[in-house]
Length: 257
Length: 257
Image 1 (cartoon, rainbow over the protein chains, first blue to last red):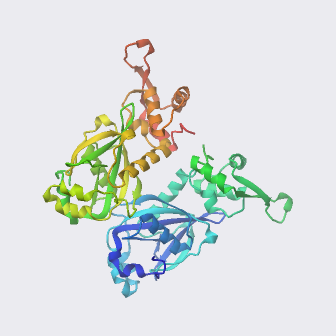
Image 2: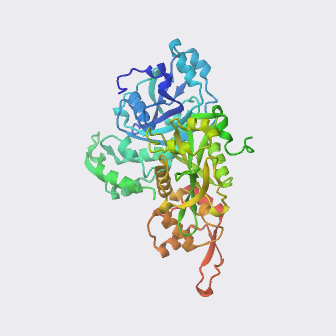
Image 3: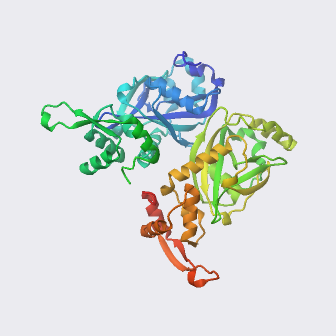
């Protein structure tokens, strides 16, 4: 019922939003070489931040997170799950809010007052295929773009800490999160899959061992060879058997066991 | 600085508390036979609920959870960690608030008004040694007591769901949570330890295999035999080498791998 609202409508009626509660989304993508995080840049400033938003009075918190993700990426049904709630008193201590305010349209004054509250923020982790994503800035930001995790800029508030916590969660729960299915394209090489794991775990893995374990799990279907210059050395392409993958995920895709 | 406040002081000045944000604690104990959850019973009613509370304006959310736990159990530094935030619109839909209000002291009217808000509640999981715990009711409850997890009464709001979610978390992360160290007494038999795992995982484990795996991990120190009638069949008592246990916990106590 809120589908047709334009960006920016949210702050015109602060009383329709839950006070003191916010959502921050760590949206993760992978380009076959490294991991990326989707960021917003505040209008006319150098301030980068995580996409986020608030919860309507008449909205489940999880649905608010889905709505925010849809607004920023165009993607409706990705992997999306809350991972931690950030409630420290000083979590917005480094907020350059006064500077941000100067670069904010005057009609947004009510929203700025709203932003001055203390917020308890629930972090949601999303794993998405970058190529299905249409990065879309929100009303207060001038751009929305992917930044490499390895060279993330300094973010406002505690947002770098929120990213760290999300990555820790992915590492700790790698067996139980659909990292492959969510982050890889439909067809991929074993090397692509291995690099994804290496980027998440932040360490090198043994190639033969990785291939052996993944094939043994039985959810990979082998397809044609990848088209390259030297065809005889071309690697095979694989795809997930989604049913088998999802069944196994319930028990844990025990690569690391 | 709030240490000397009496129970019930919290609602006399609602403006000193964060609106819309609450904490619910799933406090788990083990008596060597089964798992228990600490519950409160609302004054002059049959309504059971999880211990919980709110966050002061000048307090970190995690510290608020520690404070609440201390108030209800007398225990200062147990295992305490948030596990999920509950933000559904209908999560207090089954709340018999009107009935509860009738049994509430008239001076608590302001607090009742406070309770009528929508709350986003963060669940905290605590694993404690029941024998160190002094169950203490809060201002609005007439008793605070341990109830067996297997025969938990119907709780108010979504509190049964919160307990289920906490137990799911313990099962999924059993390798990474200090279940043994937190829930067992200083000295225990291998059978005690196995029953703890069986109660958490809700299935029987093979005795020889359990003992072999746990001993191999190297964090158990063998002590004297347990004093029983038939001394020659008495089982050995064990204790944790806490340093080794904690180091191993970081990597996961891989009983299930």
